[in-house]
Image (cartoon, rainbow, N blue to C red; front, side):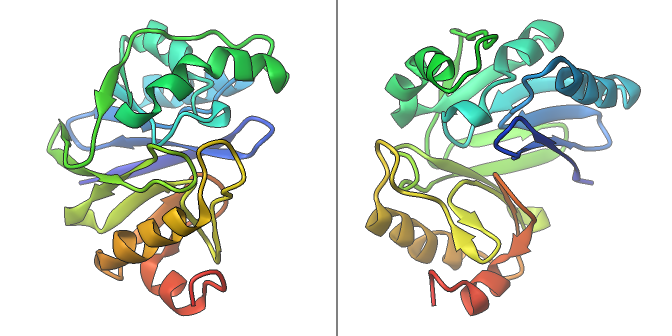
Length: 212
């Protein structure tokens, strides 16, 4: 059975998700933990629940979504998987961290890559990788088809959409990703976004003012 533990970390109020099942194998999506107390919060949950953290997977490589990469890699040995089309963006994260005031950011160089149609398996869980550019050039989402759950990163929010004014962003591309990829999934799919509260595709198809 899929279980989800969410945390809200760093000054950007970024949502970090721990996903696990009865096997206790787990992955973390977009670790935004930065401060020492945030590291303690996520590690306490992992340790108390005896989880085996296998992978760190990123929807995209903006700084607020990858602050905790090195901490979790060093503490648990979890491998890092980033979007293939954001290789250059990730290489520049260390410079971005300095610009945005994350002076204590520590970069994790070792990583593998994810592309659309890749499959990630851990425990009894299988997730599909969806390519959803627009907010960033190589943005991915992670879809658990059997559970009608999708982690959308910064593409789709509750009654809102991701910003497109950052380097590599494009409004038309973002709308196309939502309408011609996300909206083809089961409308009962629960969306766990990179910021803010969860929602459903059905709700966003009906009420999202940016998509009606």
